[in-house]
Length: 275
Image (cartoon, rainbow, N blue to C red; front, side, top):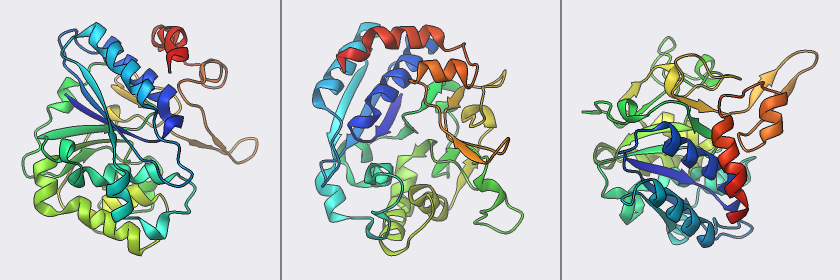
């Protein structure tokens, strides 16, 4: 299975937890080809090579065929700057998933599953990964907030996907020029949640999957396969954005009351200093 993470050095703890969850919740004979795309651009501190090397050794302990590869996409990024969205709340790294078609190691793949650094595997993902993508550029799940406000194919077509978990059919994406369209949008037009908006506007044929493959609520449900520790809006006793990430172990327990990932987080606690 081809797995993609994108970001700077700040995602290393989340990526460690996410990778551990794949290894500990997946089938023992599963093979993971994990790619981490980063950049060295102005104030961005890239994902460390030493951290990637450690993660590569870690995944090989579970299966010698597993791998973690760090990809520096700085030049690709410089040549295709998302100019109108460089000053957004999110770092430029949030848009790196839009450059799959320009990275040689990625554009040759049949499919790749992109995961945000705060996505944790709760059950085996092979069924989702092997989804039939014939004639489809990407498969994903509704954005729990955005689906109520954004519809790109009519007022009643609820098709706005959350970009934290997206399964890409790479050949179909190359054929349609989907990534190229998304990058051009980010260069010419400011958008809220630029990378997610650009993808939703650029995808022609999408496959909407059950919520269990990208649970964005506060706690996982009984059937949840991938739990996304995304920001949640809280309205009582006052409006606020609740932000709890899986590596914030105490807050995972105290704020969310989630304990079912404790075996993963215990392993994380043993290994995090290696990053």
